[in-house]
Length: 463
Image (cartoon, rainbow, N blue to C red; front, side, top):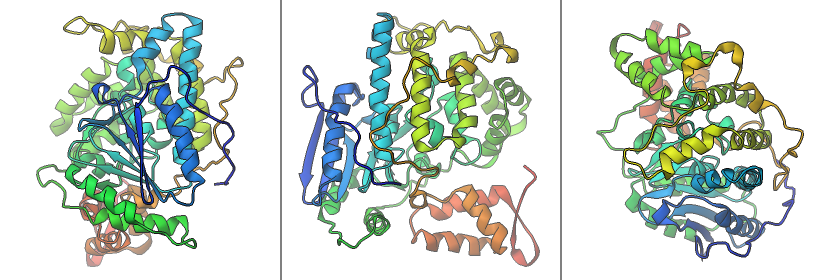
């Protein structure tokens, strides 16, 4: 990544909410606290206009060592963007839609800046972390889940698409998990946010204040590289690990994980539906429930999300946000977004009304319709999003701080032909004994390998 300066100045505007973000400094620690607990810390433009200049200031300061982002209260880091405001703007016509598109430009600039930030950045994913909250956390080198964490990309439920860089991070998850989460808006909770790789660490929520105090005390030498500083932080976080909950096994593993990969690795929505209908045995009930879920989602959003998962791996982090800005602009003109937000979030009817999607159902969409295609066409009347810096990468530069991926386990198995215990020992040593690593690697080995001569594990290519 380059070290280019910030390209533009973002600052508060008259009328922005006071105290919707609280900043604090303690020795070398700088803290961003989203402060709208009554709205589950939903992110709006006022908050972004406060956060960006502080992050720019801290990045240039020799006194700022570590940045932590957290949410006020005990319910949420951030439940998402304040989409109710955007839907209400869109109802005003083209001028309101342009204002909504401007919000996404601001949000994506912040997301990209976090992803390419030059100081250690830690996200406390304590409580609800969805949509816009994911954008503030998923691109961080350190993402800490707790027993209260609820992670989801719920956009297809409101006639939108998984954004905030989802085109980059979801397709890079193991197997078809990212596609499954994108299309269904399914939730992960607690330790499973860690097991899935969404979080890099799992701590009990009561440990976070003590961790903050400890992070404030860290001192780095001028000659420490970014990697060395992150290594120190990694060991510091692990000091507060008190174990993973024994009654919370890996959810997206075993037979369920095999079914997810079978069904959500298909090329079209129709093929996904067909594969779910064919599921039998222990995953049949899950498949039926998933079919019901998909039929509640915006058909347009589901088709766009699947295409997004297929093309996203080819986009750099910068291109991801520039392309998502274009897609978001198209959704601001599509009736499903206002319809979905109104039905799910704004309407006072109880029970909440069922959204009237256009087209109305997945069955109403024919393959030759290609309803997702217009969303991936670059609009001539919308300038390419200019990001805060020209920093860019093709893969997360600090992904080794996370849990082992299936690709990493596969590489070790294929290269070294180790026994099961030797593979486990390899990753436990690589991760310096971090809690939960053996559990994750054991699940991958149980599902993806067989045992050959002399107890050596062999990667199974049959699936």
